[in-house]
Length: 336
Image (tube, rainbow, N blue to C red; front, side, top):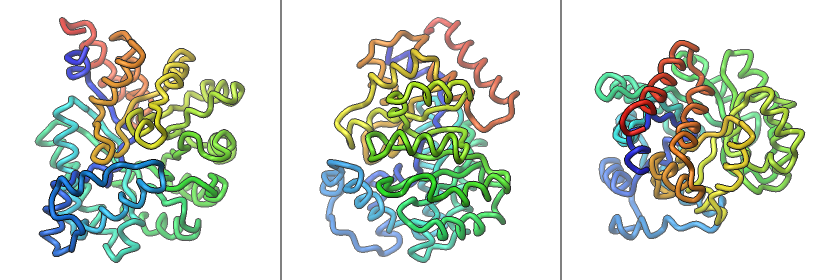
């Protein structure tokens, strides 16, 4: 099964590029940019990657970003991830990035976007992996700041496929950002939003995202099963879920594999992704292996995650169909 998963053409739709900052690269970039670190070895730093919830994780996560200062830093970060992903036969990825986490500490938006897009272009040429960018807003800041960031992004619109909403969900419901999302829709951006597991008012947040704001995907979102009518509406609309089993386990003590199984059995467009793999210890390959092992999934059921993922990408129909054909060809081959 591991061999099968390794060769399966994959698509990743829930990946924070800042969450791919491995400790080794963090040390290298700190040295390059003369950023003082509190840790003297990679091992000491990696030992801090233990979390007992979302808020402690975010503290470590944002601290790590301090080493990202220049356009080459963002290029190197994205190149390292895309190289790793290509080695796991990820064919296409939609990458989250958090501009406010950088512009808020004085790094120009231009540095961020140009470093990431240059890496994406080079990876497509050199590695055969294709990617697009999703700009996320930090929901624990004011909606006005998100709107200002949206306007700041418009000169770079050709390089950004959509918008998302991440960071600490507590007290920061989707409705807070309704005007930002309405403007983003007017500008032609595609829409997704984090609805993290087991948050206060989690189901209501999913309802707001779907019914009031009109997102096209839900990042995480497994609590939807608590409301069968809402789950049925999401299925009718053909919306997707981008779940992240290993990060669920690290932050909430449970991969939510049973809920992922339930969504799969309902025919929902549920997908498997890695979230922040440098911090949680698993890229997309490891996440698929974990879910398969916990649930005893068949090869076809594992492949269904990838069918779902390619189907809900923000790609033209003909391009989707090409990737879907790769999955079916693989299943029809000797490994499948």
